[in-house]
Every structure is written in C-alpha cells, then in structure tokens.
Length: 313
Ligand code: MRU
Image (cartoon, rainbow, N blue to C red; front, side):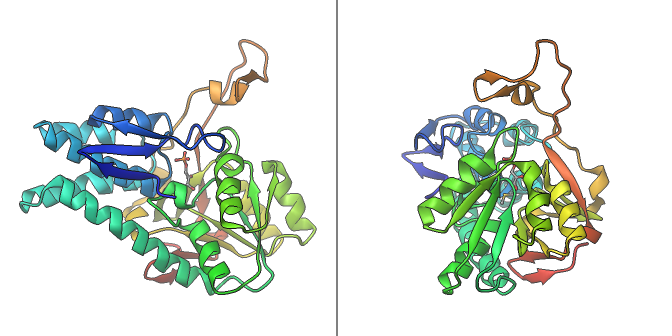
C-alpha cells in the first residue's frame, strides 16, 4: 500500500489519521496543503515526509512560486526528521542543475522503495527463524513510500521463509504502533500482538522478545532520534540482553551534528490529554509532550542501512 502518489498534477496522500478504520487518499493541490498534511500527521514517518516534501516543491514549481522561499516554509513543517530538509535541499540542487522538481521527486519516490528493499535484505540477516521482534511506532510502508524500514526487515525475513512474531508497542500518544504497525502486519499476514508501551520491559524480562527493530528520524553523532518511548525500550533491551537494531536509510543520517543538538518536536498537549476523543486527565492539567527520544549509541547493536549494517556514529 503506497502512502502517496502523483496524478493529474496533484499529490494524493493516504490520510494516516483515519487509519485503520478508513483507507482514504486526500488530494493536495498546493504545497501549503502538503505542509498542513505533514503538520497534522496525515503523512508521517521520516522517509514519507521527505518524499511528500519533494512533491510539495513540485506543486510549488507548477504554480510558478519562488522555490527558495517555499523551501523555507516546507522545512518549518516539522523539526526532527532530517529527511524533510534533505529532500527539499535535494530538489533545490536538482533545479540548479536544470532538472525539474517533479522529475527529481519521481526519482526519490522510486529510490525510497529500492532503498527499503535493500535495508530489508541486510536486516533479514540478523533475524532468526522463530524470533519474536518488538517494534515501536511505525517504521513500515506507511512511514515511507512503500515497504518500510523496520517493518521492511520483517517483510524481507518473512519472504525468506522465516516464521516470525511481531510485538507492537501501542506508541502513545498518537498510537502509530496500534493503529498503523498492527494494521500493516495484519495486512501482510504476519502474526502480531499489541502491548501497551509500559509492557515492553516486562516481556523482555520474561524472555518473550528476541530482537528489537525500530526506525529513526535522525542518525547523528552519539545516537539516534526516534519516536518517544524508544529510549525506554532501548534501556530495557540493554538490561535484558536483547539485540536492539535501528533500520534507517542514509538519507536519515546527519553526520555533521551531535544527536543532542537535534531539535525535538514538542507537540500539542491535547495529544496527551485525550485518548482519541476521550479526555483522560482533569481540565487544566499541565503537559509536556516531546514527540521524539534520543537513543544513545551505546544502546544500539547496529544500524541497518541500504549499504549494510553499520556501527552507530
Ligand atoms: O511522528 P511520526 O509518526 O512521524 O514519527 C515516526 C517515527 O518516529 C518513525 O519511527 C521514524 O520516522 C522512522 S520511519 C521509517
């Protein structure tokens, strides 16, 4: 299932806020509509945000907008996933070489799928027959154009004939694990179980998890930024000797900076105050809602990329 496609000079995005109940593609006619979709998590996950941003630049190009100005607006949509900045800069570079934004966006669309398949091929080597693999958030097809990074590793291992079980953390507050990763694994016919985030340590303590594979929003010096809750999972994995892998394309690497200099997005308190439409805390409750964690390199067994499995940087 593709997260986005281009048709008749418009970008169609699978509205992930509606999943798993409804599979609806929303039409974006302007780059501003794409920015709105990125901010509201209609399209989310680092690689998918990058490719959506590239097509946003293509929409702006078709409308005759000033692409340097538009680039700044698109980059301001979300701060943590480096793929957003990488994609916009790549379009600007392509333009300076006389390549249209749309042609470059199509190239990035195709590359994303091939890259994820390569990540899957390398990642499958560390997954053993009968493993139960825990994943956090959604680093699947829904976080990319297709196939996925962490869930791409699962797909590739299953395609090799391995019998696996997947455990998904629900991933409060937005529940990408419950809504998206469980949905994807069910569609794929992979046995999958849902747990609350706080049960991950308990399952590891009981020896019920053999591997952890998660995605990343940024890989930088000293660690990896990924969905809030990733640090707790990594700490528990270290304590109970469960190998902890990060699956990410090279476009998520930002080798110039320290991971501690990455801006961690702070999101709307209502995401925490409400569970779906139901308020779960008293009126006036003070909230802190960081959307991402930093997992230090010493907690990471390896980073699975399209070029092989690398040591953390
Ligand atoms: O807030 P989200 O849903 O965009 O966060 C997504 C994640 O944290 C993913 O794990 C990450 O982007 C990797 S996607 C291959």
